[in-house]
Length: 499
Image (cartoon, rainbow, N blue to C red; front, side, top):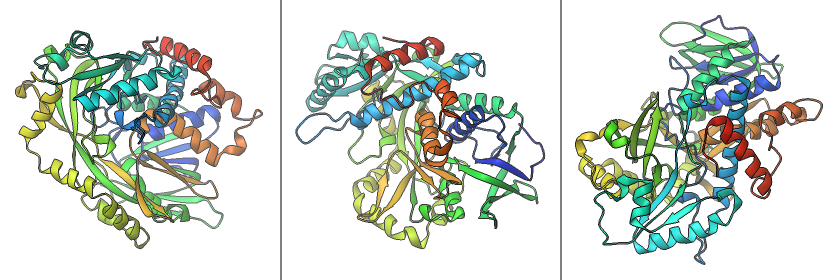
């Protein structure tokens, strides 16, 4: 931890030390080594909230297996456009990580990423028909080259034995598999990047510091007031640019900034619970991330999945998440978070979302009232022979769904990550959730385009940026050769499977 004295000013202030700030700060320092950067974190270390190993699903979201990214159209066809976006955004993250490994910033990619097949698994006639149509559509596209499909018991058992062990043949089942999938420990990755960042000149990180105020000075710079947790001490730093990457805490900070672009935004917190198995004999029989279909009316982060997780070299299994409700916006936050976020400007959007999402409300109430027996019953639909004594409950990180103001619809619930930038390009805030961590490099590029476009030239940052992410500006959804080339290169550097 860096406990140096707070400087009077900095070029950039990062609020929050999760994967978003780590990615943005690292890329900015690569583009301009002379930048001075100060980061504030309320907790005692980086990557302890939504980026933490056990708070984050760690899927390495490439839209291989998440069925909610591929909705069925009214005509029965499958829309894979959203999946393709996420899939190719993850390629940029792979390129960035491969750059860090090649440069020696991260000596061993196995410290944060491992090959792990991604699977979709469904049962029931209607769901099997959906998965069959989905596979036909996706496997025809070069981005999903190598996607396998099977309705055969022996084949699926070979891919993931726990799925078939004890399952009857009363109803049809089907699965798809992408062996190019990954398991990513975003907590470990965050700490590796901040370790590198804090070794650079001009970078300091101040843990156990809460940002209390954001205001402009007469010259238009931001004055960031930070309070030392547990001490009667505050300090103020002047900066040209503020990056708010504080997860569920970003909404309150955006409101403190009072930029017009942030007016009307609200947040709806969704908590999560996992069932976790650390029994080696069980985890040794399952090496895959298996996603099913979400219950009707549930939020996207509640899609059930049986995940292999590799943390600190040990393989474990997670199942869930089961959705819950808390008024906290952060796992280590306050029960008053949601109430403090209510402003006159976002009351109408909040009420509009409540009116339009009755099914979601009913689903969350049902999840909160669900007994441990019901939770375990859901696990056995994936793993019929699961032993209750092998699994323990674990609390996941908090997610805050964006409630976005809209002139036509008053307000609506928006999934994904929202980038809100000040008109003068001096501040940016990130709101939202999945698949944020997996697409942090893409999100950083979007921030660069919004706030630093004048520096993305051949005479300035562009050559270096193309070293970090060589396919930036190339549409990998259309350019099959570039897609195949970058995946082969990054797989070799990161130790991943390639087909």
